[in-house]
Each structure stands twice: as C-alpha cells, then as structure tokens.
Length: 330
Image 1 (cartoon, rainbow, N blue to C red):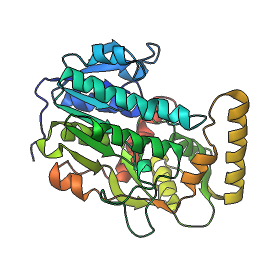
Image 2 (cartoon, rainbow, N blue to C red):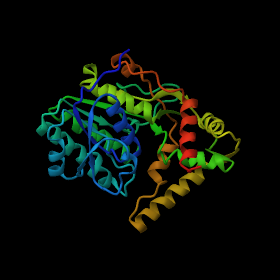
Image 3 (tube, rainbow, N blue to C red):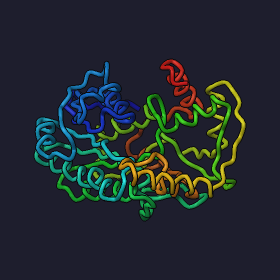
Image 4 (tube, rainbow, N blue to C red):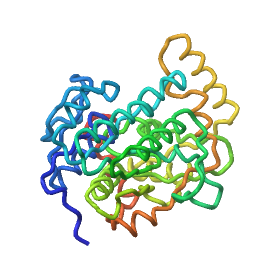
C-alpha cells in the first residue's frame, strides 16, 4: 500500500525535542511535510540536530506563543506532555490545560487536523488474556493516565477535526527509560518484579512515528481514536531475552519482591516532597508497574489507516542496542 503524503504542508509539532517527538519529526518529513517545532528550551535541541525543522519558540502553557507558532500550519501534532509531576495539578498544567491551549490555537489557525499523542495509560491496564480495544471503558490508575484522558476530552470538545493516538510503552534509539534495562543486562542482571506474569505491548519509536504521520495524512483517521504499537505481548522474561540477544550476552535473573518495589515508590514520593522534584520511581509509577498487564489490539488502525507492518520486536531491540553502542551508552 502506498503511504499517505502530507504534500509539503506545514505541521506544527509540540514535544519535538523529546525522544518520541524527534522520531515524529523525522517521520513527518519523510511523508513530505515541513515541520515547525515548538521549542520551550533552546538548550534542548540535541535530538533535532540534523533534522530540517523550523524552530518556533514557545510553550504549550503560553497561549500567545502557541498562536504565533500555529499560524499558517495546516496540521498540528501535539506530542508534548509531562511524564512525572509532584501532584495532580502538576500533571494537569500540561497534559490537560496545555492540550486545551493547543486545541484553541489549532482552531484559531484554521488547521485541517489536530493529532494528539495520548497514552495507553489513559485507558488503564487490560484484563488478563484480553488486549485493550478502543471501545473499552477508560479506567486510568495514575494521575498521568487521568490527565492524558482529560487531554483527550479537551481535543474531542474542540471544534476541529482530530485524531487521537494511544501508544503503549515506547522504546528505541534515544530512549532513556527502557535503556535502564539494557544497562542492567549489560552489567549481567535481568530484574523482574515479583513472580506474577505480566504482559505488555511495546511500540518501537520509528514505527510509532510512521503510524502517526500516516494517520495525520489519512482522511479515514479523522475523528478516530487508535491504539498504535506492536500488539505482540511481551512479559519480563521475553523482554530480558530480547535484550540479551541484542547485546550478545546473558544475564542473571533477579526477582525483586513487590513489597520492595512499593517501598522504593514510597521513598520516591517522600524524596519528591522534600526536594520539589518528582522521582523517576514513585508510588503512582509502581501502581502502573504492578498492574496485571498493558496490552493492546491494533486492528482498528491497521484496517482504517493501513499502516505498514511494524518492525519485528527482536529486530527493533537489536537496532536500539546498536544505537546505544554507537553512541557510547552501553
């Protein structure tokens, strides 16, 4: 199937300086778009280096800067978001209120489409043995998931054509979250939490970015909400084996009791309150880690948009490991 084209239109991209956002910028350009990246901090242009994107100073919390950046843009991809915050208000300031500002700017600019990059966390975990589908009731279990869902509601309430993409956990070159597991396996340790088997779906960043670009260009995606990623379920052991194969070494399996993980989360919460900075592992993140599973079905986006087949996950892990090695991360 021929991939949709964005016909040299200008696309405003928020969150372009981040790991996922930089891959989206590359995918939009590959589809023929001109990318204008909203940049809050000019010191954080590392992942946009070498990408022919126009830089627009601004912040999703600053409506005036958004209006200036959105002027003349045919489409908008809103990928900016807060992954960690000290409290619900901290998440809402960006994930809900910032999304409302983006939707208003899109309206003012007369944009043809707003694509919002939400999250599987907005729906909550799946029931064991049954992947999430788009029509399932949402039941987020964290402030992050709740505010991403609130962002979806802001997009749907706006008087503008939209598409919502809900990816699961994303990995690939430039990622620093799953990178922790790569580094541990490199050190000879493959941790798993408790003895219960939990399955997750994953999204390889270049594939997710290509799906986002295709959905943005596809008339069939207008007004739709899609899960996007690889629906193959992976458990802790499968992920450990894939990383071992990618790095070419074996690691000792180390089971961490769930009680120990909860304790670390509580310590993270206390440290966040004391320092004013949200910890990487806090109580809400632990709640997500201990959920029964995070798996998705991608039937809807495959049928309606016709996205390309994802990179086989083991190959994606090898490409990710190669990037880490070439850049001196492992």
